[in-house]
Length: 69
Image (cartoon, rainbow, N blue to C red):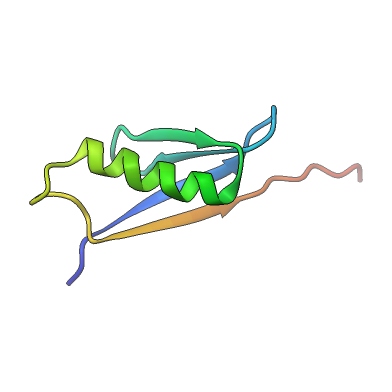
């Protein structure tokens, strides 16, 4: 079975996106979705040895919106 890593992605207050890995000390940010995808891949490569790196990366986008009742 392929070993995967899930990143929780949120919109940053100042614009752009942030991503943090669940269960690992990996955090990155970028201005656009495309840049974030590259940043997540780069951060993962830097964090793991080649033999230990996950084969799948999942970006789980979370958007919170507060509405008046």
